[in-house]
Amino acid sequence: MSKLRRYFSKGNTYFITIVTLKRKPLLLDNSLILLQSIKKMNIKHNVHNYAWVILPDHFHLVLKPAEEQLDRYIHDLKLSFGAIYRRKHKLQSGRVWQSRYWDHVIRNQNDFNHHVDYIHFNPVKHGLVRNPCDWQYSSIHDYLREGYYQKEWGVSDPLLFDREYGE
Image 1 (tube, rainbow, N blue to C red):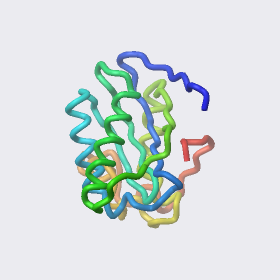
Image 2 (cartoon, rainbow, N blue to C red):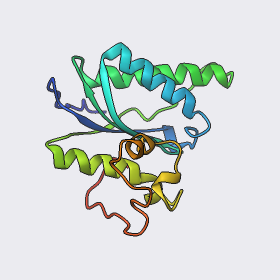
Image 3 (tube, rainbow, N blue to C red):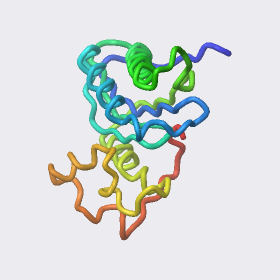
Image 4 (cartoon, rainbow, N blue to C red):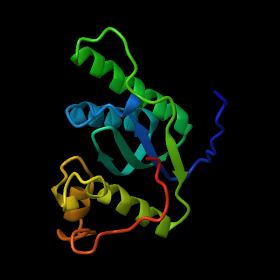
């Protein structure tokens, strides 16, 4: 496999997609483990997480690392979740994640808003719910409390996204 070069610059915000190995749908049943691992790695690596969604076989984040390379954060996040997951399910070994991840550098406020909307609309896009607010595995509930969305957002006027987002 060729060495993938990624662009990293201190102060950038990123949209990330991480997918399970062979798209095995294990994340919803283990969402608390994943959220625990994300919180732990956010503290360890001084990363601010703006938005997130967990789906059966992948998850998305919009985050901003303060100092460290994004690769180190992703690596440690995958290791943390994998170790707890294997312990919980009494597995001696085995991969949980695809080798790579998809990233996009957020370029401006409009790009940020677009990706946060994409994250929150993702369960509807995948046919898991009709209303994004019905999906419990998402930061949309924080955004609702803060008044950024109304409860009917994304229901009456389905959103269209014209690009790929690492799925």
